[in-house]
Length: 174
Image (cartoon, rainbow, N blue to C red; front, side, top):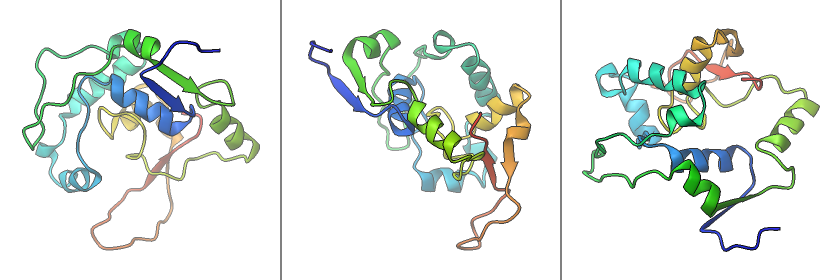
C-alpha cells in the first residue's frame, strides 16, 4: 500500500499509461501534431534526420540509461516554445504511482490479445508510443532483424487521395 503523496498517479499500465511516461522521460520529444507529421512526410528535409532515429532505435535495445539523457541544447518548436525538461527515471520512480489491476506493464493488454489470438495491431506503424519519432518502432524492428513482424496490409480503404501507403502494422510480439 502506497502511503506517500505522489505528484502523478497513472491509472492503467496499458498503452496510454506507457505512452504518457515515455513522453515525460523523453529528453527530445517529437512535438508535431498528426497533421504536421503527415505534411512533413511529403518532405524528407522536414523530418528528423534518418541517422538520429536509427541511433535512437539502437539505444532502445540498450535500456533506459542509454536513452534517458538530457541533450545539452534544448530545441524550440515552431512556435518558439522550449519544451519543459524531461523527468529523470529516478524522479519518475519517486513521484509517480501507477495503478493497474493486472499488476504489470501491458500485462492486461498482452493477456487479452493472446486470448483473442490477435497477431497484429490494427494501428499503423506511425501510431505507436515512442515519443522521439513516429518511425522509431520501424527502425527498431529492422535493426533487430525483426522486419518480418511489420506486416504489410494487402488492402486498405482510403478516405481521400492524400492518404498514401504502404500500410504496415506491427505484430503484437514486437
